[in-house]
Length: 150
Image (cartoon, rainbow, N blue to C red):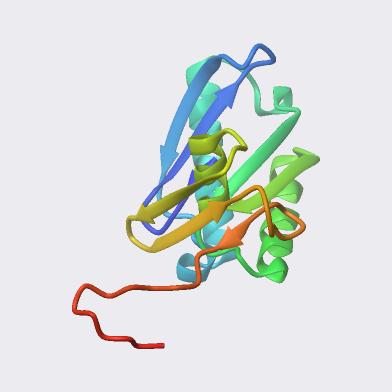
């Protein structure tokens, strides 16, 4: 699942890691639209993906939601609880959209990803000095005009 301030995209992958269904819906950044609207749009995308794959939502055994607006742990927990209650998908992981983009780009190896969409973020991962999740946020910002705004 990839959800942001503009749209939500769901991909269904089978046990062989083959894409079997896709779905899209409206925004799912809970800071912009609220937790319930975000989860509602996530479920719409999931349902559409299930329809396209000709499977039931009950067939889904786990899910990873990569969403903008869930950097705070309390927001991750609220989204996860609401999603699990409504979807009945017990094994659900909620990450930021930057975290899933970084892993999709680097496949777990050192690297950097920049997202410039409705919102923007830069996230990197290195072999040294990582936090408990193996991630390092980019802290220095360099402006094109050369002015230091720290």
